Image (cartoon, rainbow, N blue to C red):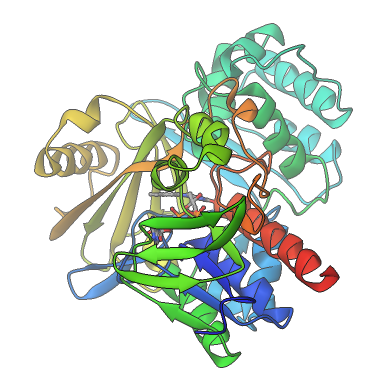
Length: 442
Ligand SMILES: Cc1cc2nc3c(=O)[nH]c(=O)nc-3n(C[C@H](O)[C@H](O)[C@H](O)COP(=O)(O)OP(=O)(O)OC[C@H]3O[C@@H](n4cnc5c(N)ncnc54)[C@H](O)[C@@H]3O)c2cc1C
């Protein structure tokens, strides 16, 4: 460990902590990263299913994830091999009914939306017209509400038809904010739509990892940090912050003391709060953190014979418990289907075997020619994301704290985005840039 006067510690090896540690390393600082789990990655990590590697939850990125893509490039990760990038194609299947399809062509905004809606399927002319008018306002930055309201209120204010709500805006909202439209913050939703659909014409692209999440960032980031003079310590839970006269002095992991002049807490609010609470200078931030609540995401992996496949890598489902299925052929795992359930719901009351059976039954009805699955694994992440509810923006902290040398990073800080890996990466890199400025000006 480097000498305490200049040492920099990053607490938490999720994507925010890794992005922060890599950025500091790239700027010439030796960093020590402490992670409580036995592996890196946090909420975006590799897990085992039978004898293969899967993810704790199927992750999808967008072309608008500029910072994440830049980070992967910085680590010399070959993006063509590790990521499958496709034009946004929302295909939603409803049992015993017609399907909906909306594709976002590679055209400049608002032509992408216009042609996307013209070519869409399952929507009436009135549906398309209502969505297009909302899209035009979005493009012209002309959607304003005096105060944050729910996405459902916003959609009703802009006269969106029922079909467009149920088969376009609601699935997009749930997938990106992991929060039902009745609670979701319209401020955050508008920003997500604007930044994905109204800037560069490829920002709306869907990007699916072709490797497990561990191979995508945590493994190469670990190598990079250690090869450039830093240290990564696993199974190290930080239990105490050492602060004197509003200056950070280090941290404690159980009985081990690590001295440091800069400490980044790249851990979620529920883990951060107990560390901040004992220090009066941090009471306000700790208090705001108690205002966060969380929504789950469940992923049900179903292993079918390798011949089972879907027509496209991702497809949406309407009227079923799971909202999306991903054909893991994309990760070289033929026959493996990941069914995703975002947000809260009655499914959280079911036991894992009941939930697995329910999802399997529902898929059987939609795809009657599929044989039974050979193996099923349910992974529940109860605190997958913060609840991106109305008013959430007022709680989100900056990276800087009132204690000199103590920084916050994570998807929940004030990036303006929902809990996503892009938000985590932006936050981690911002914290690193601020530390670099502070340390080099001293
Ligand atoms: C199932 C699921 C599906 C998702 N799908 C998507 C998606 O499709 N697209 C997308 O962009 N995002 C998705 N997300 C969200 C995304 O994964 C998160 O926003 C992102 O990973 C958060 O990163 P983070 O570094 O801010 O926090 P975390 O990943 O929570 O990292 C914090 C780390 O700190 C460690 N830690 C906690 N306390 C301590 C302590 N006291 N001492 C030391 N270490 C500690 C934790 O073990 C953890 O590794 C999904 C999340 C889940 C769970």
